[in-house]
Image (tube, rainbow, N blue to C red; front, side, top):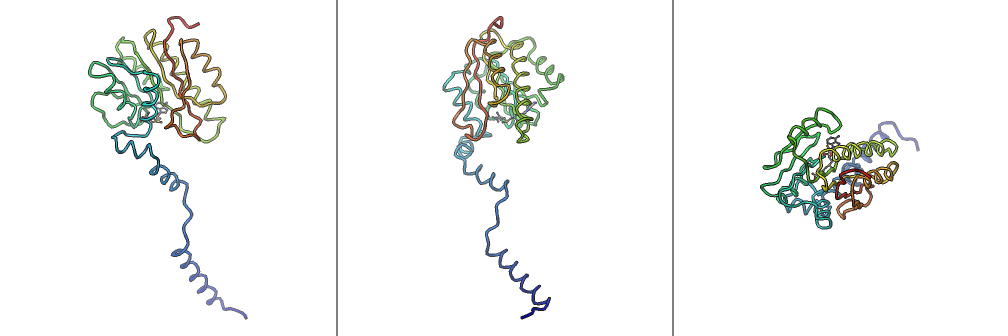
Length: 232
Ligand SMILES: C[S@@+](CC[C@H](N)C(=O)[O-])C[C@H]1O[C@@H](n2cnc3c(N)ncnc32)[C@H](O)[C@@H]1O
């Protein structure tokens, strides 16, 4: 039997209509991400408890284990947007403490938190931060900064280590002796050297992978306590 072209077109239109209405659409990767995100228990908890992101629970766990933040402290929160770490820090340092939050993205105001918008890599932003401190040294530097990931380890890893090195340099010059630093790093090339450099500057360094940190993420946090007066 030979079908006319009109019949063929008609059949293909009917098949397409059937597929559109009856077959499930494959999910795009952004849709899959959204599904995973909304079902994430830490996302749901953050919404209930008023934190701006699930990252709050990473710092809360570090605080539970390492007792980093105390009343009256001066703290810098690097890579602060959307602001959940600053939300955690503020009540812990209290009214006589100071929290400076820095991010290259805009951060909605958090009453009591001083905000700097800009890239930590730039001299201009660094000078602004140093000016704001007005000669006061810090008790704690926290960095949750991560460069935009390309998915290519050979590019992402050196970028993150470079950023972590800048944080260590900044900390060495602005932290008071005995102060602490928390910095996000990825396990991979350059990590061992970075860990060794941190150990030369601090008396105690541990690495932590908080429960809220996704298991598929290579991120971990170095918690460094007791800045030495003279690096060893
Ligand atoms: C994982 S998010 C931080 C989440 C934050 N701790 C919270 O609790 O809401 C990482 C942030 O680092 C910032 N960031 C990355 N590189 C930066 C840089 N060079 N200077 C300033 N901010 C940076 C990003 O814009 C991003 O907002």
